[in-house]
Length: 391
Image (tube, rainbow, N blue to C red; front, side):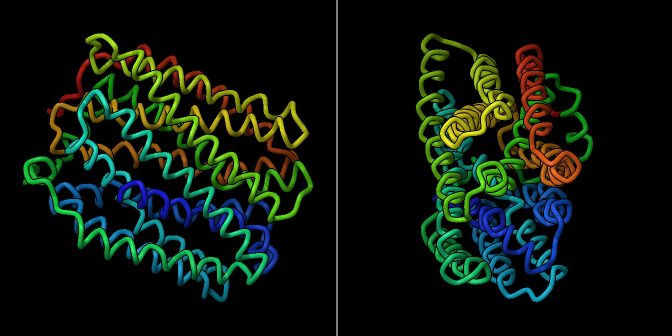
């Protein structure tokens, strides 16, 4: 069910990236304005990451999961009915409200139900739902746009989430003692104490850099392919979807192989940083993208970078769950991590829009991502050692 929640979440996010050219023409948007529209759901998403996950720790994943998916699904459908750009941006911000606790719910489930040595693999498998969601959302969106227009794309994709919400409420029951042990919410001093932990800061540095690249790819890849290869929306959608699928499958294999190698002996949880660093270095291959101008090598580089990025995200998220001493507050701590990383990630669509507007290409964005990923890998290797203790 969590896997499907990620699929639906990122399928709904992909709906905008594939419809952006049509939406831009209808509302007369420049590339800079399209960048701002792409980031609009992140404004509320960023602000509510921590409050929503605090509520998650108190009331449990069953209620929060049901409400979250219902809210963002309603926002999707309203987006298809928007009559001007202001109304559309309002629906994107409502989408962010619904999606804010998504990864907190996932982290809570993994911490409560998965064995420690398998959390990296479990988390990576769950996170491939993001890529399959992007793939299916891009493909379905491209088809619906071609046949009926972008408005029907939003309405039809929005309906799917309501089915998930009903199923989650009927099927799932909170694991008492694992999810609801945090009778008292996380305090401000406890949040501040996280930043005194070298381990937390190391995990956060990886989360910030990979989030920037993730949101850049999610927002701009279809447009990039159309711009670079001069192809139509359907061809761009199928190419983007292929990259996401290959990236997801490769991430599961890569994550499992690396986790098996690192934890073959009695390795400590902090040794997972070697997996994170290796995958982050692999994702920096995005920096060579400007050297290719044909479809096949471009798709190969994108797929490889996505593969490593997903595996790094899964391992890094699992490492947070492993290294946190007070597991009852994993939802809130995930919320703190997401608040910081999304503050960086929400700039990706905007910054990229300005880069494209002023340089006429995406090259500078790819170079900057590659450098920051390499730096984050070094930081993770150096800092992630001790468990994370909140005072």
